[in-house]
Image 1: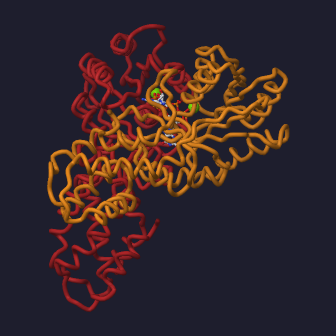
Image 2: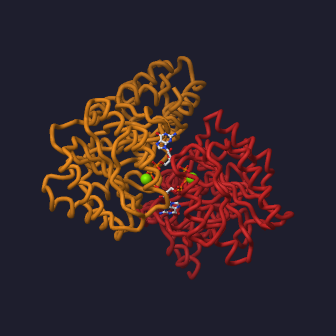
Image 3: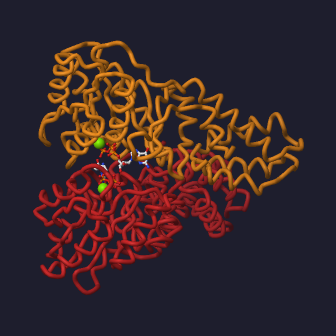
Length: 291
Length: 310
Ligand SMILES: Nc1nc2c(ncn2[C@@H]2O[C@H](COP(=O)(O)OP(=O)(O)OP(=O)(O)O)[C@@H](O)[C@H]2O)c(=O)[nH]1
Ligand SMILES: Nc1nc2c(ncn2[C@@H]2O[C@H](COP(=O)(O)OP(=O)(O)OP(=O)(O)O)[C@@H](O)[C@H]2O)c(=O)[nH]1
Ligand SMILES: [Mg+2]
Ligand SMILES: [Mg+2]
């Protein structure tokens, strides 16, 4: 598959059948590092392999299978599809750094929820970026779902509040709230996000029911900082990994799964409305290892 | 994360401060720590390997300066090598070149969401304000919803001009129309903002190559996110191959990413990093400084000035 080109090519050509020695372990470790697993996670995975198999004959296929299985084991607990609840409305807040794919993911989710018979509404909470509102409106039109918006420059928390009030009045099943992209190290912008949550809680203390952090698969080790800070600032309940149709593998997810244990509710595999898939641990592990 | 490298290195060197020169074994042990630090900073593995080999050569046998610890000395060696690699020995940042007959075409390329459209407006504003240039901006992004509108709004915000939008017009035609309009209306520069695309998307890479062939840009800037991981080499190579990139714009340098992708892309393309995006606002654009990025990749800045004073 496309997400695994580099690992595949670095592992193939290493050997057909040969003794598992230190040199081979080092090469394997490098292949994992090149897939964004990070030096620590790569070292640990390789150590597990070395412990069981050192000095024994092993084939390329076996190595891939072992790693894929190990990765799937780590990821299985976090592979949890997005859960629809019978709330009216279920409120989903979508957050993340700039350009990660929040608005696009909302457009895709809207279509999926609607296909499941839900009444969906979108809130254009990115009141900062040029044409962010227009972008979400076009996504709304694609699935024919209403978009609550104000003009750019307005107050995002107020907009979210209005949207929730409207969703309640109109008997909506799911309200998806878009937010402006923000870097996690910017305290002021993170505080604005906290404010959105505080303000919508005035209407209903249980909202948002879900807070999805959208991560770009091209991102390297900075994803650790993103998850850590967004989680702390706005109680993230799940992750979406986008752009997995590219050459980047999203390997950082393995360490994230171990450290934060947040469900990965979906993955983005393209720019089209149907390019959203459930996250499957086995598929991810096997495709990362080129199986 | 910050200063972890210096801690690690002082650990490695604690026991050998009294010796006169760095042995191969000392250097190897220290460079193992440097290697991990670079990988944690997202420098791509092949680039890390080349880099380490280079530093190793310079470090072995280097006399230990009395007043500082060997750990700090290795850091200085590594830092200097990083600066050299990031700047290719150039003292000052390489500016965007406008040294061509007007209207000078500048094309922006990169992955989805990397910051192309925002950077287009930032650069247009800078060229207008600092060099008094008349800049026309054109969006060739016919794919992302409201992309053309985004650039039009940004152009308005900076009091600049954007090419009127003709719905349904394909990218190559838009680019040609932009050049034509610029010629007729006496613009100095035409900024061509393209749609985001994956380096492995053959169809879209073909499309951008066609735009390039049709417009022959004087500068083709690869816009890349400072948070990019190991994939930076694949991306940079692919764009360099298809549209002969002339420079890199690194965005989101206002984040807390260590920015190793800068080194990866500099190394594999040989192209200078020309500008840094440091925020969402239209004036959040800075010149590239190799020493700052080097300090950032190493997760430290002050040690180096400390060493320099010693
Ligand atoms: N190839 C690919 N592109 C994607 C995917 N998801 C989003 N994109 C693209 O990434 C770019 C950014 O997507 P947006 O949805 O605007 O991202 P955002 O997080 O809302 O951005 P800001 O609101 O500016 O922070 C667009 O060009 C999208 O088409 C994906 O899964 N695959
Ligand atoms: N913090 C920060 N945000 C930036 C910077 N440059 C761009 N952005 C933000 O990143 C997001 C994406 O920027 P765009 O300019 O739309 O990116 P693009 O490459 O044109 O995206 P596509 O056209 O969808 O491929 C927006 O939210 C911008 O405000 C930067 O240097 N720092
Ligand atoms: Mg958005
Ligand atoms: Mg754009």
